[in-house]
Amino acid sequence: MSVLLVISGVCAVLAGLVHVYIWFLESIIWTSPRARKVFGIASETEADATRSLAFNQGFYNLFLAIGAILGVVLVLAGNTVTGWTLVVFSTASMLGAAVILVGSGRKYLNSAFKQGTLPLIALLFALLGSSFPV
Image (cartoon, rainbow, N blue to C red; front, side, top):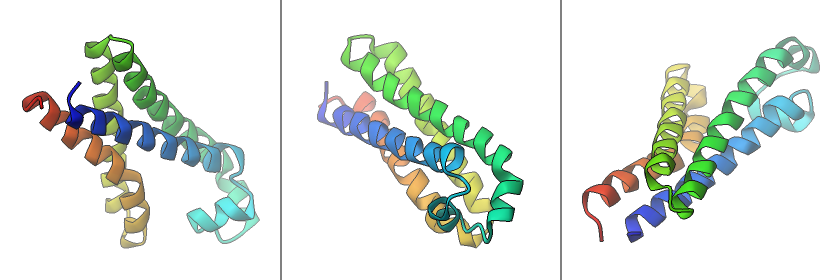
């Protein structure tokens, strides 16, 4: 496997781990002071009112994380077509969600940057690695 594809895989796994963390915040500890601070939720009342929405959204993040990480595992196991398909689909979806977050308002730029940088790098290196095997 080329160095470029290894970098893509590493970034995909790291992006997956970031999304597992987001799932933990949204689906497990949403009403905690820590999660409220991360997401700018002003009060526990507001967190309680949005809890079911966050719970659902958290699982979207978890499923994307599973796809990216499982894709890399499949690549390492020799099932490259299925693995890279999962990696590209999952990281492209993560990046798409980050772009949508940017469109939600300027206050989300930092979060979108954190959410979308690793998937973007994974996609770029997957493209480069598949185009220019080194």
